Length: 460
Ligand code: ARG
Image 1 (cartoon, rainbow, N blue to C red):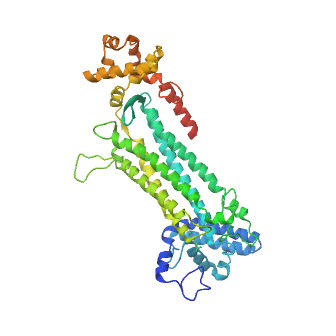
Image 2: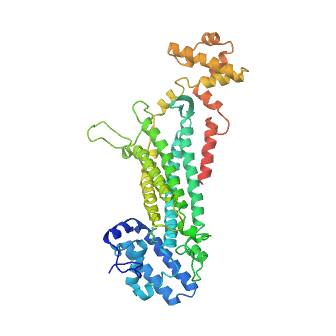
Image 3: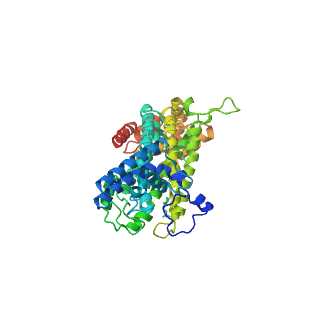
């Protein structure tokens, strides 16, 4: 006989094609421990409402514990005729306790409020796991920043040399977005944890005197849903999770892209450690940045999971519709993706070797100190508009002769403008340029040290 939670009003069982289409156990099985935790809490609230005796709760709890152990060991698994994880676990309970007792647990709940609750619990657990992995990545970036204090590099806009910056400053610019992602995960967690849908029933709430707040507290929520229709139909918590994971993917991909560039022959800024790079099956010399490329590629997949989910939710009428079963695979994939990507990416970052001499040498090249010349002139009382023109004329003179700004002689400077006295040379060094950017958030060494302390405090 087929195992179904419904059937009373049907004269035949479902067609095999429907069974095939309907089945979700191949992906929702991972919710089993949460379903069992929900069932234990539900048994307790049924008891509180006078619908189960103390002995019955004890027997049910024991049966659920046994079932949980069998799920964990693999002794109990879904059968092809189990529609979903909830159906399979009810079968398992009935197999252990008989239909009389096992069949009592479904009172006052629906798979609709059940799944909405379990999914929140699952995502909260994995959101915390992702946060932990992300934190480790931030620590690896911070470690590199700490190890390279004082090293300058070319700062870029439009991928062109712009102004020298500290390597640590640049690295930390990748850490802060990830810190905001950590904040997003924490805020999301609190929001999701504030509304347990258990007790919403199919959509209208429960008539059996069950206290949703009690179940909520039992399951680690800080509150229960204010509206049972919303409790069963809302999936914005899934979409928000998908967004945060996609944003993490995007933030990681921006660092990944730079590492891919830095690792080219032309840049030559970094060397990847052997353990975190790959070879070619034909070209013996190759050492490829596959982790960074996979990070870049997987960010597309994370975005796809978000957009697919949003498309499923758009215009969906209230309350529960079976479309909502499509909410799980995208975010399960996002979780799985980040849980394997982040540790590898962190390892790659932690073991990156920088060619600091090369970074330092390239830092001022490409007239990256032209802004310093203009700002020096402003400090000498020249209007910025004029200062910009004078500095631009210096660049033009250099370009014509294939030299850098500091190669201009005192006479060259004087010929370009009488304002360009020998004093200008003090800003024509990387150290002078860096030190001058000393307001909060700037790349001056003292400010970057301060920034590191700020980051440490945020992570503490
Ligand atoms: N497996 C379903 C889901 O993930 C829950 C079952 C609700 N089914 C139903 N026919 N109301 O959304």
